[in-house]
Length: 224
Ligand code: CA
Image 1 (cartoon, rainbow, N blue to C red):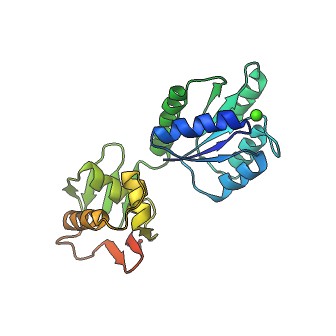
Image 2: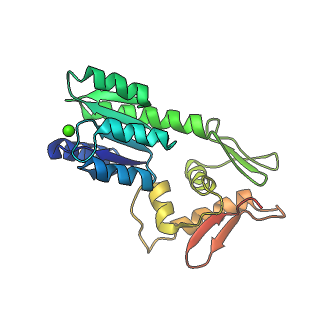
Image 3: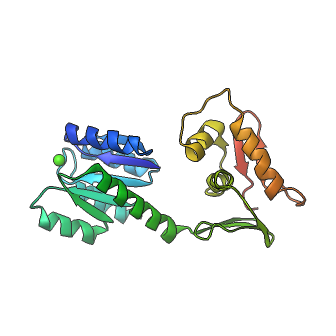
């Protein structure tokens, strides 16, 4: 999961970055409100950790603007003790949660899990293309009504592809999303898993949904 942290206090930002990275998150940090806002509107994140008092642009203005643009990314506000009005305003503007500084990193991690899970459930619990559907809540996968049993990694791989049918994912992107680690060009892990997935999803079907884009990566055939 990819998290954007917008926090100008370098010590706190680095404490958050280290803690979240150790917990397996991919973390980007911005020390300014204006730069952070640009990142939040141009790149995909699974959640934002947003300080309120920031140089360039304050956290509440960032929050308001993102929600006005219908960017629904989960946002956890970082507030200072005593910022009660800001906290309430933040929740009214559509923040998902807040934490008062100082806090334990475990608390932030737990809340990130809650808000991202909630967002996934609220926005897209069913992914579908052609006659293939995956239910992310029940983890049921169906092809033309036939049930497909997948392992945890196979499911994660299919989910990555199904999140945007037609978009090509490189092996490196797949590695990062499915295995949470940096791509080792020497491994054929992705190929092996793609083969397994093909066997389960495409074998016997008249239309093959998992495509190889030569020299680039893989994608799920987009709907016609
Ligand atoms: Ca600050």
